[in-house]
Length: 447
Image (cartoon, rainbow, N blue to C red):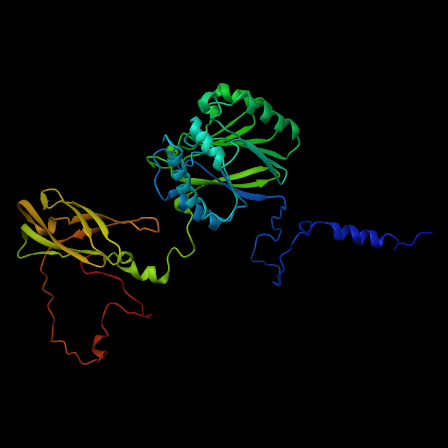
């Protein structure tokens, strides 16, 4: 006869052998009663999920500082690692010394990244024999693979044609097909290369695509500097925009924006988001000190315009004094355009000024009417302004606003009796406004 406890040591051993992630964590809560202030306690817990980022073109008329900004912002997101898809340096130089200088500059930006970075070459990196040799010397192989969490990462060289022109070499194709054949059962295959052959060189892509046809697969590329998403024959294709490379930056509708791809790898495939760099912000983006510095802009009092007072009811000519305050310790580039109602002329009608740090600019704007006009019928002129700051160690800042330039007559307000300043409020009980809770009132008599 067997004891019912005979298998207990084996059971305990098996339980202890389970990986820690098999123990699903639970939310501990103490709210009693039928109503709970949440939708569910079934926390999403998928131990094989992981997140990584993809960056794209840094060159082709590069804009200094953007790639470094991307690295800083990826440190805020803390992916498991970062993939690249090429064009990391500008290339197009003729000596190894110049190429090494470019790689040195790139590595200065990359070295701030706190997670692993995987290189994939672009045409600016390996598009000529000398560039290829320097890349091999500094970075290593131009195509390779690795497996992480049962996901195959296949990194290819799209400039492996004749003399490192567009295309795959026979050697690379044989290697890639063998890698795929040797790993038929990975849960997903992710392909990274610089040029989107499915868009620009279909014959080259057809050399590889059949080997990807019978597996779940997603492919990433760059090169064309505008974002395009496509699906075809079960494969998802992401052609990224830029991460510092040349672009008119005309917005998402034209695929022209700086971004990174944020990829969450799940058992059902990658869940992807294109994160615009402008939308990844540090927690201290606005400190109390910064808020105090920017208070004049928050209250719309950095730019003021005095009213033009008219004696009588007709207006022909008058002058408003504009004052523009720069509250920061950086020069301010200010541009303004004055919109006038029909029949009025502004002199000047535009402003372009550099205001030194911490200073105030005072200037005058003259408004003239072609013929006398009733003040009561006049709409105000409007100064539309833009202010721009450039910072050495931070992204630039752009502000905008508008300020009315009012034309009005002087108003006499009659009083029935003299006002005595005696601190006695009992004779003010007929005021039309009652304040029940003290508060700051933000206003400007000129607004």
